[in-house]
Length: 438
Length: 146
Image (cartoon, rainbow over all chains, first blue to last red; front, side, top):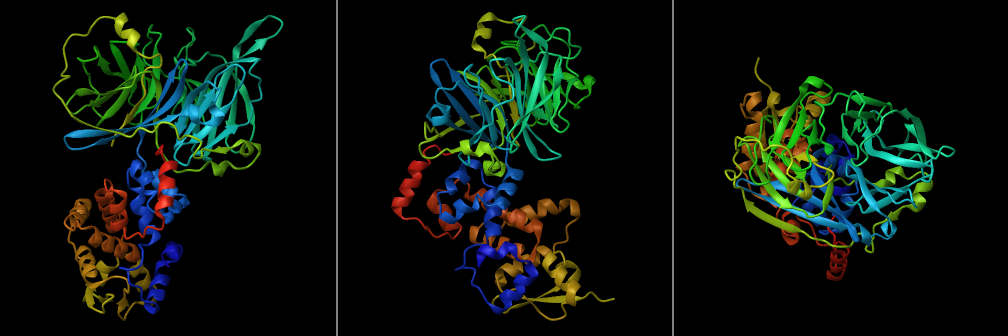
């Protein structure tokens, strides 16, 4: 009975019930109620609950659960660890705020344990709605993968139009176009000119819509992007830092709906070569600095150049100075492998955890969305489910409880001049990413 | 003009009166009233009298709209027992009272989120439909808990 409850209109139900009396103490809860409760649980609990009974395992595949859960899913962090001669590891970090402390949950996925990733050099492209886009950056292959570690699915998307021998990849991005609901991978590249043995300055670009089975060529975009950073998605646009010196603005965005590139207002110019973008509490942020001082710029109003302002300036690792950042409750930053939480109300920053070799991170909103939705053409032939032989690698569920020491990192008044080389060494190439905890 | 009163009947055949303009916060009742005037007794064969009394207490609240969120939160907080909350959530689902259902489900989720597997089963009246062998196989399979 409970299984078909949500499919009937309620007044019909009452009609039915008046004839067949059901005792709720014996009967299982209605599916709709189960779905509602389940979708409100933290991700780790839901995954845990899949084991509770077969019914729940099927429940998490139900589209009504998947959509309800996504609408309630909180953003967490996904760190990508890359080491020379070591496997790539994805590390999922969820922070649960309690009254006087926080729990930090981390879980690791060893990508080397996944058969199709073996022998590839994998890097992260981005994540949206629980899907993670990865690419193989080795010269022999030119593969792009979409993966959902929660549903344990992975697929290789079709080969691009241009061959890797003829091009040099510049920048990658992954996002969803809200008008159509289409998931898109976009990349820019330079092309070789065979006769001159050089590169064309103008950049080519191509886009892949999940489910269509082929890359489409887009127009040229005349500026070099900072390819170390994958595109940061906000407001239906994918953003990169422009590395060309003569570009009037230092940020470029790609419209995921219209599929066009465009320069975008950037904060005041900096000579610092290490810059990165992030989205924090709905605002585009840009970091300057490879070590300390480390500055985070915030674009308060999207698209308004004047709204860029200095958010956070961190001068040293342990003694931090925070400047105005009034409208965040709680932000999390990854700086050089160290994860910081920032509490604007008390104007304090706290180091949550040090992840050695964390090169990059993305905000990750776990979901139960299935890649089966893109089951259309040839790509599915190459789909492999992450079975028990798949991502079974290292599991590490770490539960950390730390007392917050809010006073410890109280602000100091002097800002240290320029970068400290020693600090610089300790920092990663790819700067920050951030997410907010609600 | 006197206010119209509706009569609701619980599973155990107890009758409850409630003014119509308050009862129609329930979308289910509103639709019934619209369709046939619901002059007779409205049977609620899945809701026991204790739960129905709670629902009626909620429907009879005299809160200003801006305090409503806090009220419903407090209302479920005061009934912090999981079985009571589940009954309440189920009644709210049947009667289509969204706010009450949301609050009750949220409270249940809050209470069970740190439970063990066995406790979750018990709290949500789920039968274990797996054999110990199956359970072990699944545990092995889910060694990475993503």
